Length: 117
Ligand code: 5GP
Image (cartoon, rainbow, N blue to C red; front, side):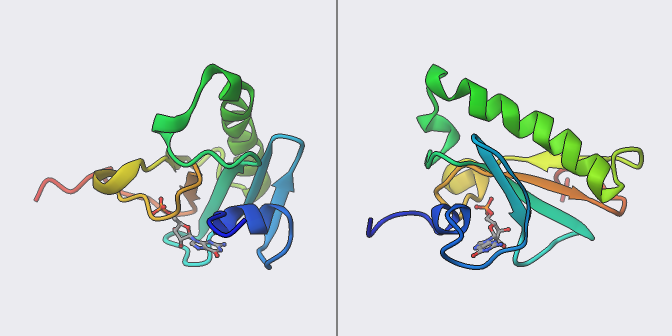
């Protein structure tokens, strides 16, 4: 598929990434340009472009993303100190890769969610 996302290739292990978790519905791997000591992307194995493209049929995978986030947070040792989950959508949301992904960021105090400046 010519217009397939880079994340689909990572899920199928056709291009390298440090995969930290994978099951029948989701895959999680370290972000190539980490913005925090822990920066992991959790993605549905099915390629869904944006949150706007989700349907009820995707609810199992989308729900799994949260339970896997909690599992990985424990695995990474950030569950107690806390972490942030971010899903960007579209242009104003700053989404760069058109395959839904949840950022799990932690390992330091992340400050306010958005700058007030
Ligand atoms: P977005 O801005 O779409 O929410 O975030 C996309 C994220 O994907 C960015 O944090 C970026 O560093 C990460 N990313 C883009 N291409 C790759 C890649 O090929 N491998 C990995 N591991 N991360 C990637």
